[in-house]
Amino acid sequence: MAVLVTGGTGFIGSHTVVELLEAGEDVVVIDNFFNSKPGVINAVQDITGKGFAFYEGDVADKEILRRIFRENFIEEVIHFAGYKAVPESVEKPIMYYRNNIDTTLSLFEVMEEFGCRRLVFSSSATVYGFPEKVPVTEDFPLSSINPYGSTKLMIENMCRELCHADERWSVALLRYFNPIGAHESGKIGEDPNGIPNNLMPRILNAASGKTPMLYVCGDDYPTPDGTCIRDYIHVVDLAKGHLAAISAVREKHGALAYNLGTGKGYSVLEIINTFEKVNGVKVPHEIAPRRPGDAAKCYSSPKKANKELGWKAERGIEEMCRDAWNFVLQTHIR
Image (cartoon, rainbow, N blue to C red; front, side):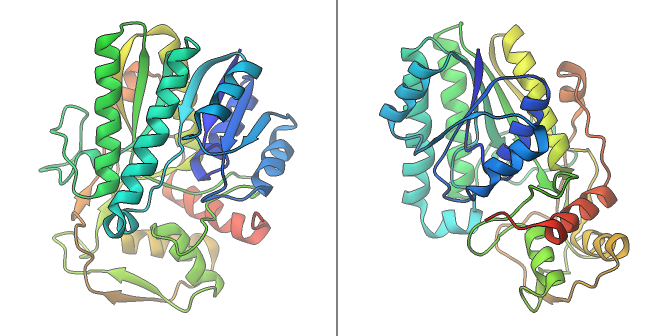
């Protein structure tokens, strides 16, 4: 019996594979390295002292999926594979719809063929659009404000309708807020291909001199220091949330949504200042114009996940910043 992890060499996927292996699960991974690096495989094995089956390929390719299911006894799937950059999705909406929806449809069809109906889906807080208030709870109205968010919402709807049509399906929809940090070993962390869009990789690039400056998009929001407030969660805590979700889908049926966050909001400048303090390095930064589509505040209520999954984020913002910088100091995956 094994758990298939699609996109398992990515930032969140690789940390989840570590947690699964350390919990004694058999793991199978498929990835095409679109936004990750092959060295992650050895790094995960170094951390855990355990091996896992790996298939290089595209999740949209049903033939490689069928091969995986024929060669392994897959009972659950954690589905990370997909494009995830919001600005890029605005520029290339067709690419995002084609990739994110096609991969999921192919996965669902092959899961059905092999009688595998337990799924943990990597969703996003973007499905809440512009929430009217905070903290955000799972019963808030759902909407999308960019193509990336639209694909996440469409896949959530697909999961709900699939469970409605066939009560044997069990799906956990995990709505992430803002994952940062890295594994404490420094062997895996956030190291995206190309130009990063998320805050922490941009901080790391500025702190290490890879880029000359971090541009903070807007300081005139209705927040205490004028910069946007978000719910940052340590990637290891987020990975442990997937482990809890696997346990849930083994026991429950239907499609259940859970926020994975800390329930606390920090501003962009608070993150920068904390990073400088705990690591003793400067992050050159300047204020730039607002980015279109950024909400002033967005942070979660994780109470449902606390209660129903028995999961709670344990690591604070200082540990997130320290572990992220340690990854840069220790290694870069190649």
